[in-house]
Structure formats: C-alpha cells, structure tokens
Length: 414
Image (tube, rainbow, N blue to C red):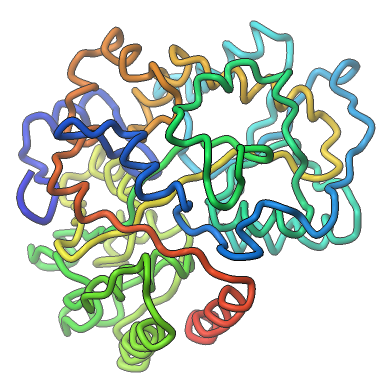
C-alpha cells in the first residue's frame, strides 16, 4: 500500500481480489495494537454522524407504534439493505448465510437491495411512517446519523434483546453510542470509509489523490460525481481544507459548500449519486468520484484500472445499523435474524466476502479459520497511518441538521 492509494499490484490485495473479497464499502481497523472495534468506538462512540444535544439522547418524540406480530404464523422477514452488502455465491448468485438461516429457522428472508442512499430511502418510507402505516419492511440498515433521526421521530422500535441473545457478542466498546445510548434501538451491521474512486482509462492514466484535484483538474471536467451523503462529501472537502470535522464551525461548513458550488458552476461535477455511481465508474463515463471504498474494491475485481485513494488529509468513517421500523409485522423474526448474524462464525462468512469491519467480538478468530490471510489483509486491517487519518463527522443538533442539509440540497438539486 502506498502513501495515498491502494496499489493494484500489491500482492496481498491481488490475492484478496482473486479470492473474491469484494464489497459495497471497504473494511478497515485494528493496527498497532488498536483493535478494530476499539478504534471505531474511539471515533464513533459519538457516532459516525450522530445527532448531538437533544437529538443525541436517543429519546424519541413519540413511541414507535407496534403492529400485531405475525412472526409465529408467518415465517418471513422483509429486509432492505444497501447493494452488494452481503455474502454471495458467485456461481449460483445465492446468498449462503441467508440460505443457512432459512434452513436453520424455517424463516424465509425477502432480501431487497433497495437502500441506495440514506435520504433517498428515508424519502420513500417517511410518508408511510408519518401516516402510521407499515412500510412493508421488517428490518433495514441505516447509517448512524439517520438512526438518530429515526429514533428521534419515533419511527423505529426498541429491540427485544430476549430474542437476540447473541447481542452479548457486540464489542463492549460499541455498546454506548451518543445516538442510541445502551443500544436500545439499533445494533451495528458494518462500518467503513469514504474516499476517492477513479478509472485510470478515463483519467488518461492519471492518479486522483486529493479532493482539490477531483474538484478542479480540467481533465476531469464533467466526469466527476459526488455523493448525495452530505456528511461524506462535505466532510472530505472540509478535511482537504485542513479542518477537523469532529469540531467544525458554521464558517467551516460554508467554506466547503462554496468550494463544491464553484466546482458545480464550473461544470466539473457530472452529478450527485448514491451507490449507483459504480456503473458509470466501471464504464468510464465517470472518471473520478467520491466513493465508498468497498464499491471500488469490487469493481477492481473485474477491472484493475479502477483505483481508489484514501486522501492524506483525511477521510470519513461511518457505520450502518440494523433497525426495526414502526408497525413491522415480523419483529420477532427480524430479531432472530439479527441474532443469527451476531454469531461470530456467521459474521465471519459475511466478512470473508464483503470485507468490512465487523462489530461482533470473535469474528477475527473465525476469519482465521476461513483463511489466515484475512486477519492480516491490509484491506481488512489497514496500518496505523491509515487509521490516523480517519475522521468522524461531529454530531449535529436538529437545527444544524436542517440548516446544513438545506445548504447541501441547494447544490445537489438540479
């Protein structure tokens, strides 16, 4: 691994890709004696992007409504998740751990990859939740700051830990988070980074290693996309400007917005996306973009011209979490599903494919049984200098969230 990007010629990386260790976002954590979960807790015990103050108490304005639980009579679960975020058999296109769960419990999982972006998904489910209607989903995985919002608005239910005995395997350092004290409403699924993805064919062989280069290089004009996730995109720009995103000011945020607006006005930016940027990046329609690193690792599996960079000045750290929405019809079944994935042996099977940081204690030991190189692979256990550059977007008050979101939406719209 070089100073700023993961080298496609790195033999460990190449071996990982050959084995099919690919994912939606990249794993990270744990070097120089710092465990993955401990580092995540140090950065994210306040949450990746949690809401602070009143919003960070974890107390909802209203209690999430509960439907009559049909779990005993209807052996199904409807799970919405981000794309390419679970283990897959490349030959049969089946999902081995889900199949094993169904065989073990008799519960069928209707698994939908319809979670492309937090705000986009929220826009789909909020009208139903606000109207007191079932979303048609029993569980989904939201990023920390969105979990804070869902709890605050009473849109998710408390977990019944009697149905999740394996919750005891949640690493102790992750049990207390600002956005959900005591983990009453959520349990983490995976974590990762946001950085820069680029296609060497589309860039003419040029490496894209800084956010400034991404937003100003004339050779990239009209071929750059940024994420609709405000915290990742604006966070990267603020770090490029030398700001600490754990304690930025209004002026810092405005300065970053101004830079993004200038790039858009100059025609540098092709658009703003969720996960769908992967298709354009693979085709070369997008030369470079703000990207979740695991997406790029997966694209590298098919095309070594796809590269990514974790900027020297810093990159964002996030977590996605299981939550059960109000009026879910199969709450107990969903809790059994969460319990299943909190078995270290099961989580290790997922990690061996998706290459993320697992929140479940004991997963590393199980990974060793699958392949000893997994536990030492730099994609899963990056060095200390990489970890030192990861930053967590500070908690926002409800007023700040509204204000900053509107400022960013004014750029991303149209």
